[in-house]
Image 1 (tube, rainbow, N blue to C red):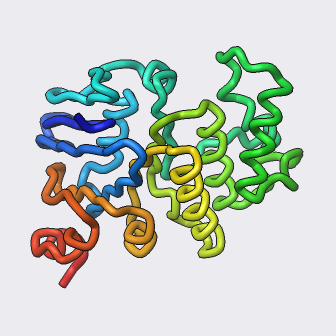
Image 2 (cartoon, rainbow, N blue to C red; image 1 turned 30 degrees about the horizontal axis):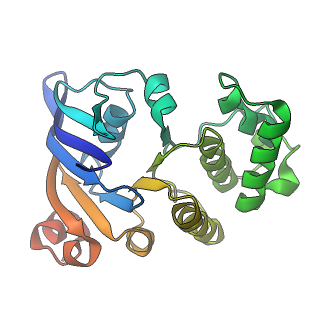
Length: 237
Protein backbone atom coordinates (compact mmCIF):
# COMPACT_ATOMS: atom_id res chain seq x y z
CA UNK A 1 0.00 0.00 0.00
CA UNK A 2 1.29 3.45 -0.95
CA UNK A 3 1.75 6.12 1.73
CA UNK A 4 -0.75 8.35 -0.12
CA UNK A 5 -3.01 6.96 -2.81
CA UNK A 6 -5.68 8.43 -5.07
CA UNK A 7 -7.91 5.63 -6.37
CA UNK A 8 -10.07 6.05 -9.46
CA UNK A 9 -11.30 9.52 -8.48
CA UNK A 10 -14.04 11.22 -10.46
CA UNK A 11 -15.08 14.84 -9.95
CA UNK A 12 -17.74 16.60 -12.02
CA UNK A 13 -18.68 20.26 -12.24
CA UNK A 14 -22.06 20.80 -13.87
CA UNK A 15 -21.81 17.38 -15.46
CA UNK A 16 -18.40 18.13 -16.96
CA UNK A 17 -15.63 15.80 -15.70
CA UNK A 18 -12.65 17.61 -14.18
CA UNK A 19 -11.27 14.26 -13.03
CA UNK A 20 -12.22 11.04 -14.77
CA UNK A 21 -10.82 7.99 -13.01
CA UNK A 22 -7.58 9.60 -11.82
CA UNK A 23 -5.22 7.42 -9.79
CA UNK A 24 -1.74 7.90 -8.35
CA UNK A 25 0.48 6.38 -5.69
CA UNK A 26 3.03 8.29 -3.61
CA UNK A 27 5.60 6.31 -1.65
CA UNK A 28 6.72 7.47 1.79
CA UNK A 29 9.82 9.66 1.78
CA UNK A 30 9.63 10.38 -1.96
CA UNK A 31 9.26 13.59 -3.97
CA UNK A 32 6.57 12.75 -6.53
CA UNK A 33 5.75 15.10 -9.39
CA UNK A 34 2.48 15.71 -11.22
CA UNK A 35 2.58 17.36 -14.64
CA UNK A 36 0.09 18.02 -17.39
CA UNK A 37 -1.32 20.83 -19.54
CA UNK A 38 -3.62 23.53 -18.21
CA UNK A 39 -7.04 22.07 -17.46
CA UNK A 40 -5.65 18.58 -16.89
CA UNK A 41 -7.16 18.41 -13.39
CA UNK A 42 -4.00 18.78 -11.30
CA UNK A 43 -5.23 21.37 -8.80
CA UNK A 44 -8.66 19.72 -8.67
CA UNK A 45 -6.89 16.53 -7.60
CA UNK A 46 -5.06 18.44 -4.84
CA UNK A 47 -8.39 19.89 -3.72
CA UNK A 48 -9.81 16.38 -3.47
CA UNK A 49 -6.79 15.11 -1.53
CA UNK A 50 -6.91 17.85 1.10
CA UNK A 51 -10.69 17.92 1.45
CA UNK A 52 -11.64 21.12 -0.38
CA UNK A 53 -13.70 18.98 -2.80
CA UNK A 54 -15.53 15.73 -2.12
CA UNK A 55 -15.10 13.38 -5.10
CA UNK A 56 -18.19 12.04 -6.85
CA UNK A 57 -16.52 8.64 -7.05
CA UNK A 58 -13.27 7.10 -5.86
CA UNK A 59 -11.15 7.19 -2.72
CA UNK A 60 -8.19 8.94 -1.15
CA UNK A 61 -6.14 6.69 1.14
CA UNK A 62 -3.52 8.04 3.54
CA UNK A 63 -1.45 5.69 5.68
CA UNK A 64 -3.92 2.83 5.05
CA UNK A 65 -6.88 4.96 6.13
CA UNK A 66 -9.57 6.38 3.88
CA UNK A 67 -9.73 10.17 4.20
CA UNK A 68 -12.22 10.77 1.38
CA UNK A 69 -14.70 13.49 2.33
CA UNK A 70 -12.99 14.63 5.52
CA UNK A 71 -12.76 18.39 6.09
CA UNK A 72 -9.51 20.22 5.24
CA UNK A 73 -8.71 20.89 8.90
CA UNK A 74 -9.17 17.20 9.72
CA UNK A 75 -6.87 16.15 6.90
CA UNK A 76 -4.30 18.78 7.91
CA UNK A 77 -4.40 17.49 11.49
CA UNK A 78 -3.63 13.98 10.17
CA UNK A 79 -0.40 15.24 8.60
CA UNK A 80 -1.12 16.51 5.08
CA UNK A 81 0.04 20.10 4.46
CA UNK A 82 -0.68 22.26 1.42
CA UNK A 83 0.53 25.33 -0.44
CA UNK A 84 -1.34 27.12 -3.24
CA UNK A 85 -0.64 28.48 -6.72
CA UNK A 86 -1.02 32.01 -5.36
CA UNK A 87 0.55 32.21 -1.91
CA UNK A 88 -2.04 32.70 0.82
CA UNK A 89 -0.36 34.80 3.49
CA UNK A 90 -1.70 37.38 5.94
CA UNK A 91 -0.42 40.59 4.40
CA UNK A 92 -1.01 42.81 7.43
CA UNK A 93 0.83 40.46 9.77
CA UNK A 94 4.59 40.11 10.18
CA UNK A 95 6.40 37.06 8.88
CA UNK A 96 6.79 35.76 12.43
CA UNK A 97 3.08 36.30 13.14
CA UNK A 98 2.23 34.43 9.91
CA UNK A 99 4.42 31.55 11.02
CA UNK A 100 2.63 31.25 14.36
CA UNK A 101 -0.89 30.94 12.86
CA UNK A 102 -0.84 27.12 12.36
CA UNK A 103 -0.04 26.67 16.06
CA UNK A 104 -3.18 28.46 17.30
CA UNK A 105 -5.20 25.20 17.70
CA UNK A 106 -2.21 23.24 18.97
CA UNK A 107 -0.75 22.90 22.44
CA UNK A 108 2.61 24.44 21.67
CA UNK A 109 4.13 27.09 23.93
CA UNK A 110 4.95 30.50 22.50
CA UNK A 111 8.64 29.90 23.25
CA UNK A 112 8.68 26.57 21.42
CA UNK A 113 6.63 27.99 18.54
CA UNK A 114 8.92 30.97 18.04
CA UNK A 115 11.96 28.68 18.16
CA UNK A 116 10.46 26.45 15.47
CA UNK A 117 9.48 29.47 13.38
CA UNK A 118 12.93 31.05 13.67
CA UNK A 119 14.61 27.84 12.50
CA UNK A 120 12.33 27.58 9.47
CA UNK A 121 12.69 31.26 8.54
CA UNK A 122 16.46 30.81 8.78
CA UNK A 123 16.26 27.79 6.47
CA UNK A 124 14.32 29.89 3.96
CA UNK A 125 16.69 32.85 4.18
CA UNK A 126 13.90 35.01 5.57
CA UNK A 127 15.07 35.39 9.18
CA UNK A 128 16.16 38.99 8.65
CA UNK A 129 12.59 39.84 7.59
CA UNK A 130 10.84 38.22 10.56
CA UNK A 131 9.40 41.53 11.85
CA UNK A 132 8.45 42.87 8.41
CA UNK A 133 4.84 42.87 7.18
CA UNK A 134 4.13 40.17 4.62
CA UNK A 135 2.67 42.78 2.24
CA UNK A 136 6.15 44.28 1.91
CA UNK A 137 7.95 41.17 0.61
CA UNK A 138 8.09 39.84 -2.97
CA UNK A 139 5.78 37.24 -4.46
CA UNK A 140 8.55 34.66 -4.42
CA UNK A 141 9.30 35.39 -0.77
CA UNK A 142 5.60 34.99 0.00
CA UNK A 143 5.75 31.50 -1.53
CA UNK A 144 8.72 30.70 0.69
CA UNK A 145 6.84 32.05 3.71
CA UNK A 146 3.75 29.97 2.92
CA UNK A 147 5.93 26.87 2.46
CA UNK A 148 7.68 27.41 5.80
CA UNK A 149 4.39 28.22 7.54
CA UNK A 150 3.02 24.88 6.31
CA UNK A 151 5.97 23.16 7.99
CA UNK A 152 5.06 24.68 11.37
CA UNK A 153 2.35 22.03 11.78
CA UNK A 154 4.98 19.29 11.17
CA UNK A 155 3.16 17.56 8.29
CA UNK A 156 4.31 14.22 6.93
CA UNK A 157 3.11 14.93 3.38
CA UNK A 158 3.29 18.35 1.72
CA UNK A 159 1.27 19.18 -1.41
CA UNK A 160 3.10 21.88 -3.39
CA UNK A 161 0.88 23.53 -6.01
CA UNK A 162 2.98 25.38 -8.61
CA UNK A 163 5.66 26.50 -6.13
CA UNK A 164 7.91 27.91 -8.88
CA UNK A 165 5.31 29.98 -10.78
CA UNK A 166 6.21 33.66 -10.82
CA UNK A 167 9.38 33.07 -8.78
CA UNK A 168 12.79 34.35 -9.84
CA UNK A 169 15.54 31.78 -10.63
CA UNK A 170 17.42 32.42 -7.39
CA UNK A 171 14.39 31.71 -5.22
CA UNK A 172 13.49 28.68 -7.35
CA UNK A 173 16.89 27.21 -6.50
CA UNK A 174 16.29 27.95 -2.83
CA UNK A 175 12.88 26.26 -2.97
CA UNK A 176 14.47 23.21 -4.58
CA UNK A 177 17.24 23.11 -1.97
CA UNK A 178 14.76 23.40 0.90
CA UNK A 179 12.59 20.63 -0.53
CA UNK A 180 15.61 18.34 -0.88
CA UNK A 181 16.76 19.18 2.65
CA UNK A 182 13.37 18.52 4.23
CA UNK A 183 13.08 15.29 2.29
CA UNK A 184 16.59 14.13 3.21
CA UNK A 185 16.92 15.26 6.82
CA UNK A 186 13.30 15.17 8.03
CA UNK A 187 12.02 12.39 5.76
CA UNK A 188 9.16 14.53 4.43
CA UNK A 189 7.08 13.23 1.53
CA UNK A 190 6.18 15.67 -1.25
CA UNK A 191 3.59 15.70 -4.01
CA UNK A 192 4.46 18.49 -6.43
CA UNK A 193 2.50 20.13 -9.27
CA UNK A 194 4.52 22.28 -11.64
CA UNK A 195 4.85 23.43 -15.24
CA UNK A 196 8.56 24.08 -14.61
CA UNK A 197 9.74 20.84 -16.21
CA UNK A 198 13.49 21.33 -15.54
CA UNK A 199 12.80 21.84 -11.82
CA UNK A 200 10.40 18.88 -11.73
CA UNK A 201 12.98 16.64 -13.39
CA UNK A 202 15.62 17.82 -10.92
CA UNK A 203 13.44 17.09 -7.90
CA UNK A 204 11.31 14.10 -8.83
CA UNK A 205 12.34 10.56 -9.64
CA UNK A 206 8.71 9.58 -10.19
CA UNK A 207 5.98 11.38 -12.11
CA UNK A 208 2.26 11.13 -12.75
CA UNK A 209 1.00 12.77 -15.93
CA UNK A 210 -2.58 14.02 -16.24
CA UNK A 211 -4.38 15.05 -19.39
CA UNK A 212 -8.04 16.03 -19.73
CA UNK A 213 -8.80 14.73 -16.24
CA UNK A 214 -7.25 11.28 -16.68
CA UNK A 215 -3.96 9.65 -15.76
CA UNK A 216 -2.07 8.95 -18.97
CA UNK A 217 1.29 7.88 -17.52
CA UNK A 218 3.01 7.15 -14.22
CA UNK A 219 6.51 5.97 -13.45
CA UNK A 220 10.17 7.00 -13.42
CA UNK A 221 10.81 10.52 -14.68
CA UNK A 222 13.36 9.55 -17.31
CA UNK A 223 10.98 6.99 -18.77
CA UNK A 224 8.01 9.37 -18.63
CA UNK A 225 9.78 12.14 -20.54
CA UNK A 226 10.21 9.79 -23.51
CA UNK A 227 6.66 8.35 -23.39
CA UNK A 228 4.95 9.09 -26.75
CA UNK A 229 1.59 9.75 -25.07
CA UNK A 230 3.19 12.32 -22.74
CA UNK A 231 5.09 13.99 -25.57
CA UNK A 232 1.91 14.24 -27.60
CA UNK A 233 -0.26 15.51 -24.72
CA UNK A 234 2.07 17.89 -22.98
CA UNK A 235 5.77 18.14 -23.68
CA UNK A 236 5.48 18.60 -27.43
CA UNK A 237 7.47 16.92 -30.20
